[in-house]
Length: 299
Length: 130
Image (cartoon, rainbow over all chains, first blue to last red; front, side, top):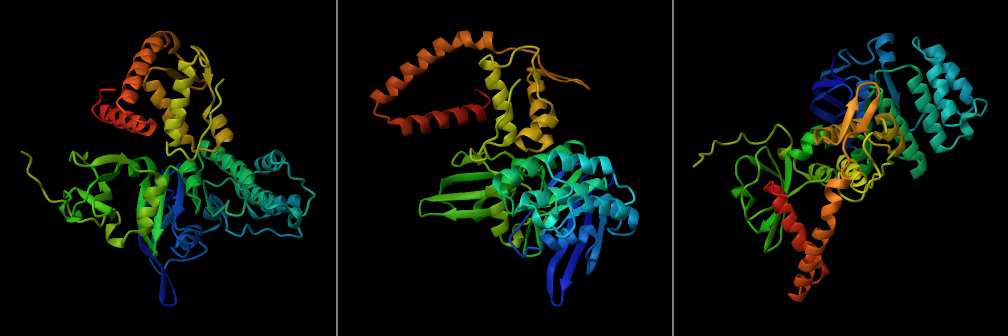
């Protein structure tokens, strides 16, 4: 099975400014991917590249093994919910489904109708009169009706109230349980922790961290102990973030080895702490760019 | 049937919360041998978490010999935890009460006791003792 998304040194430039640079990623299929980063970090640019709404200035991108937006077949394989949930406010819920059926060769009316029924949308109601949650659900129904293999959502729940958000995410997770690959961007790290099993952190147009959540959490430790110089950390520990008082040091390190130094109190890192550290870290600490580990003699 | 809850604010990963809740239900007799756990789809629809998290939790419980997945049917409880451990509870509780009294006599307040327990529990777990 091809990767859901595979990029190689992808960059996108608007005028003189690079929105995304040197982005190399492999997103395995069947994952729910959380794309996080500050505003302007390049999230929407990456998503638009994956959908085929933008073309890269440099580098290559493949979605489900093919160039995005290549032809009608490829377009049908990827569903997209843009940030502003674009609907035709004068058209009814039923009109939107008819539009979906006319525009998508592989349209599955049963699936789309079932979603509309389940969330209690009235087919005769105009889209302009729907609540935020209902709009999101209608957009999801249209996106799912085309039976995509990959669903891409740009901040899908940002404007929803807590209840609508929970219902929307539960519906997404049901689709994931059926094998749909999902990529979603979000600022809500608690949601990301709940629903995502793969994480991509962007900052300043670059990938700072990417991988399966379990592996990322297992590869990082928080060390607390008496104050010390970070340069004296073992070579197999990359310091991502550090704080020092005159007596105490706290460091977030990435390491494959267990931390054996008894003067450290070692604790696991939470997803939110990890994401925030990478969003704030200087780019030298990004994955794959760590200094090559030196060999250490074992006595 | 057990109903799961996921608390986002505890700092405990959703996966651990699921495993913990099943174990807790087994210990308290809420779940018994032969009971079916909710399907992955039912769990994700109820609490909006990643389906792989549920699968992982069920695999862990299966590895511990507490449940068994029957392909195409569901996941079932294979072992009750009630008999084996409930009997020991009373004595352990007595020991613990004695220890707590000793700690208070030594001048530890609630926070100190919790901190001491937590750090001992953790270091014991890291050494594979607990």
